[in-house]
Length: 264
Length: 313
Image 1 (cartoon, one colour):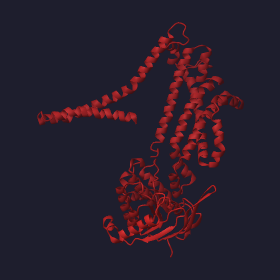
Image 2 (cartoon, rainbow over the protein chains, first blue to last red):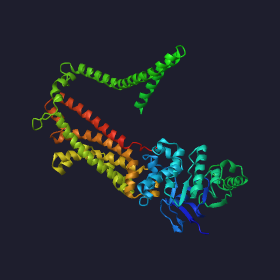
Image 3 (tube, each protein chain N blue to C red):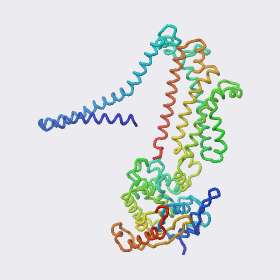
Image 4 (cartoon, rainbow over the protein chains, first blue to last red):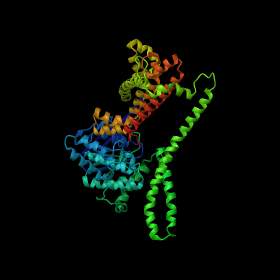
C-alpha cells in the first residue's frame, strides 16, 4: 500500500552520558491522504516524541518519515503543528500571529492583499476573526488554541499535526473545539495526525486509532478502525453501538492489557 | 497597576454614594419633576466627583513626600544651626548657592562654569559610554545566550571581570588612552556593560522552546529569528540589564571625574571640597540625585513602551 505519510521502522533512543533509554521501538504506520489518525497511549509512552519526529523537531535514531515518498528530516510548514500549549507569540496580536505564518509561507506566491485575506479567512474558519486585534494574554485558553489551529491551517500543510491540542482545556471548551476540528476536517479534507490521551476524543474524531504500549521501548500495540459515518454528531454518535464498541476496545487496551504501572 | 486601581475604586464608590439618595428620592416626589433633575444632576456630579477624585489622588501622592522633605529640612536646620557645626544648615546652603541655582548657564572660561555645563559634560560622557555598552553588551549577551561554546568560554571571564570596581579600571585606561576624556568614557562603558551582557544572555537562554519550535516549523532564517522572536522574547530581560547599567554609569561618573578633572559634576564636587564650599557640594549632590532618578525613569519608561505586551502569560 502506498501511503501519503509513512512512518517507517522508526526507533528512538535517548542517550544521556552512558545512559541509553529506548523510547520508541520499530514504529511503522501509513496514513492515507485525507485520513484522520489518532495516536493514544498513557503519558510518557513517547507519543509526543513520535509526533516531533514526524514534525522534524526531533530525529529518529533509525528509520525515517516519508511524506509523498520523500524523506523529511527537518521541520517545515508542510507539517504544521498545533502545540499542546498554544505557543502563540505573546507580543503579537492574534492577527499578527497568523500573519507571521502566512507571510513566511506565501511570501512569493500571494500579494499583500491576498495574504491579508487568507489570514482573515483562516481566522474566520476557527471563528476567531472578532478577536483579531487582541493579544494572546487577553483571550481564553480555548481561543488561544483556536488561533494556534488557524496558524497551522494557514500554512496549508500537507499533514496537520495536533499534539494533545485540547489537553489543557476544560471539558466544555474541549467539546466545542473538537466540533470545530471535525467541521474543518470535513470541509478541507486535511490529513491529520493527532496525539491524545482522551478515549472519547480519539473515537469521535478519528478514522483510525493507533494504540501504543507503555514505554520504555513503546510499540504500536493495536490499530483500530472507527467505522462511523461522517459527518459525526456528538450526541447521535455517542449512543451508537459502533461508537461504544470502539470505545470499549480502546479502554480494554489501555486499562487491562497495558495498564500504566506507575500511575496505579 | 496600583495607582490605576486606586484611582478607579474611590471614583466608583463616590458616584454610587451620590446616586443613591436621588434614586431613593424618586417615589416621594412627583415623577415629572424628578425626571428632569435626574437627567442633569448625575452628569454634573460625575464630573465633579471625577475632578475631586483626580485631585485627591494627586494629593495622596504628593503630600507625604512634601511633609517628609519639610520635616527633614527642619531637623537638619535645627541640628546645624548651632555655632561650630561642621555642615551648613539648609538656609545657608540656599543663601550660598543662590547664584549657582539662578544662573546655571554662566561661563567665565576655564573651569569656572555654571552647573548646567558641568552636568551636561558628565551626561555626555555617560551617554557615550552607556550607548557603547548597550550596543556591545546586547551583542555579546546574545552570543553568550545563543551559543553554548561562547558561554563556556566567555562566562567565567565575565564573572571575574564584573567584580572589578569601576575605578580600578581608571589607571589602566589612562595608561592606554593617555587622555582623561576617553578614559572616563571607558570607565562608564566597562561599568555598565556587565549587567547588560548577563541579563541579555539570561533572556536569550530563557526563550521558551515553544517559540523556537514555532520558528523551526515556519523555517525562519537567522535574521528573522533574531528580530521576530529573540529580541521581543528577551526584551524584558535586556531592559532590566539596561536599567541597572544606567544606574551604575551614573554612580561611576562622579568618582571618575573627581580623578580625571576637567569640566564635569564629579570635578565640580571635588573642586568645591578643595575650596571648602560645602554648600556647593550639597547643591551638586541634589542635582546628581535628581538626574540619576530621571535617567532611571527614562530607561524604565522606554522599557515599558518597547516591551508592551511581551511578557509571557
